[in-house]
Image (cartoon, rainbow, N blue to C red):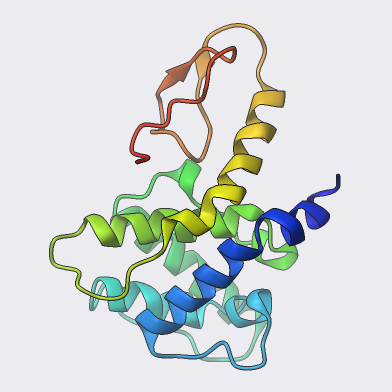
Length: 175
């Protein structure tokens, strides 16, 4: 099954929940925009970070140019790193163009990070909505590994952990 077909079947809950959470946290609506269109200029992503950690992003580029959008997305990704997300938990700017599952995985980890912050009292991300998405990520990962113990690069694992591909992924940090 092609990724886009899997997305419509197993990731719809994750898309819906990610949108709900982001809209509630930022008090901004996606409006008539679809998920990709609402995020591609990076403005909403930057507002999300500033609601989770006020003042972390000093400026948001509101010009309606592709370069301004790329700048905002990169600022968002750096801010995620400042909050403690690891590179394996982050999407790449180009992932917004085809809306890969990595975008949702980043939102998942950002939501988990917010919930773990004792100073955050805002809306909670429903982590259960991401189970289908996480299942796809694990099945793709299991197809990639050989039979030897390798560094785990799964976006679900703690970066740098090691796993035996014959066993389940190290789900450290997942409850």
